[in-house]
Amino acid sequence: MTGAADDRGRGLVVVAGGSGFLGVSLATHLAALGRSVVILSRKPPRPSGPWRHVAWDGRTLGDWARELDGASGLVNLAGRSVDCIKTPDHRDEILRSRLESTRVLGLAVRALDAPPPVWAQMSTAHIYGDPPGLVCSEDSPFGLGLAPAVGRAWEEEFARSVLPAQRPVAFRTSFVVGRDRGAGGGALARLRTLVRLGLGGRVGSGSQGMSWIHEADMNRLFERALDDPAMRGAYIASSPEPVPQREFMRALRRAVGVPIGLPAPAWLVRIGAPLVMRTDPELALYGRYVVSKRLEEEGFAFRFPGLDAALADLLGGPSPGR
Image (tube, rainbow, N blue to C red; front, side, top):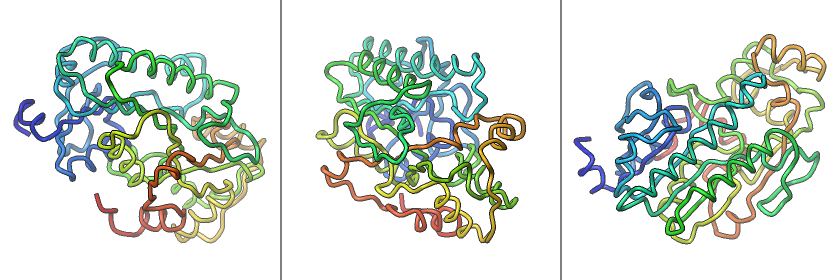
């Protein structure tokens, strides 16, 4: 990429917070479609790829804001990972990183002559909480607790920050399963390691919902949000076929070729998750079933609606077409 003017001539998309697994996957997808991509992040993605990197801290205005002027679209993925022990400091970082990055992007677009006409924003399916046995859609009530509170605050900040002239799209995203490209690989890489160690069995009751989406479909949703003028508002970004946790791990064992996975009772997970995995046990012990009513009504066709085909593609098959 030779410069900002050339980028805009090819339909520049700015991906804020794009140095992780999701951002690298999306940037690779958009570049393969002929779009120019700028990634805003503290550090450049590794390995390098078909994008330009511009430094930002996710909270203060700077020269990075000029990248948005004349861009065809903005995607905001910024936010600290929730895969951590929920100390008071981590809780604060999880919330602040989402609100501050959204707020400063709102300040940036207000100072531009030609702000991006569409702003696609990451949100979370955790906004619905953990209702046992219920399948949530976009019009389901929000849950209670830390994760739903963060999700509500995040979407409220987005609503305040987006310009009236911009088309806003928010994706309440479930567990994105994808390949490890050196940018973290997402949580699937971690689960695959547990399976290979013989630990990929039922967690707790095993009935908690595992709502998931293949990275190719997540990328196609962002592509559609950028290009389809009819797409507006909040959407659940998840496969139409969520499964219980025990079925997800059974499918993952089949894909990896490990026949047995030891179960983990809830008490053991509550002890082992923070001590061994350095993460929150509730990420494994709780879950939700979510399905998008809006995507079905608008005719979005998932490339990977079923879990077995998705895992076969990611863990053994060729790279999905981008």
